Length: 404
Image (cartoon, rainbow, N blue to C red; front, side, top):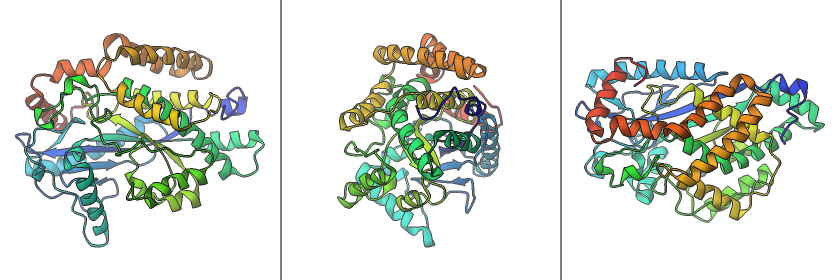
């Protein structure tokens, strides 16, 4: 295990963590078309766009609780909607895009001046992967243990260098999280409906963006987790070989990130600050796009995974982990439902012992296996009339209502 969970000093910090989020959405017109206006926000510390000009990306601050994080998400959505209403535009509340015609309706993000290279990079991505995949919206959840937990665990570990201890801890945890990312997909997938213009039979999937149709590299990257230096070198080799243009082109379910500029150089110099989980759909059942209970479950999952022994994350195991994510995104998979139940029962036992105050969070995940979870609800609410019902929901959320 990564640290001694039975140690009373460590145990007193288990409920502490830090959370950050990046949430993408598309801007649409009053009839559901992709907005063709320029991105309405200039230099804003929390609001930007990623791949395309008609996208809005919220980049949240760091908070100690999921509830605080969601509070800021809603405040920023209020700010965005106050601007969009001027052009009679809305935030599309789904991971899957609205109806669109040609790729001409998907303008590459127009960064200018000193940021021009960001646009050039996105033109490269558009050419390599196609613009259509730029329309998938998702949520990236950033997670770190509290400084209190990390420093207490370090003091109890007998290690001599804190940064090295933290790097090893997060690298090992990222291996496990990649191996278990399929479970997060199975429990939080929220995009089982789509417009026919996407060209994918959506009712086969609970999450198209996490399926084989999603934004994946043209090959399965194999990374070296034996040390942070080796991890960085394994990514750099793909860049040197031309398989990747930059480290940001690594479309991997889990990344380790530094504090400061997100680059391999900064990661090597500053070490790992947090883990980024990239497999979450925008959930249309809540205006924030994510429920606090799902964020808290991921916190519990992180602690559970930290209790497991280290393992060899070799080529075959990594390949299987990526394949599991894509298969878990298939709607109603009996195989992954069974696997999810087995894992959740283990997590429930762990939670009863170490985090009894969060047992209801795990029990809610188990309930999803019985009632079909988000995919069943979303299919029932929006299947058959995706565009009209989606627009009605976008208007509802712009009025400030929080949930379906």
